[in-house]
Image (cartoon, rainbow, N blue to C red; front, side, top):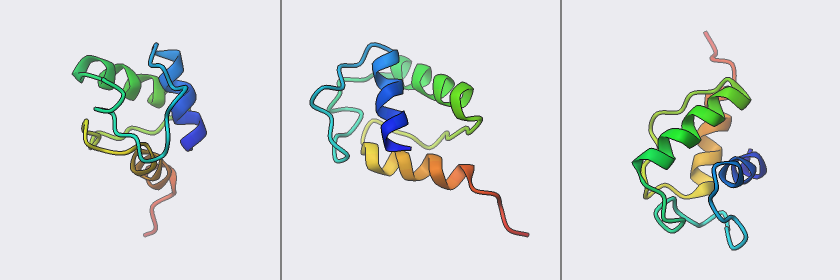
Length: 75
């Protein structure tokens, strides 16, 4: 999911050339509008909605949140 997330960042115009898993969304100079755009694009691409992303979340943490949300819930 990390690689897909980086691709989605590029799609919304965020320079991902120096991105690492430890980069935060703030490091990428994102704002609330770009975070919303990323969330919408990620939902359209994966069918997964993660609403707990903040500017302080690292890309690795975000990828984990998306992967966890995509897993089927056990009854």
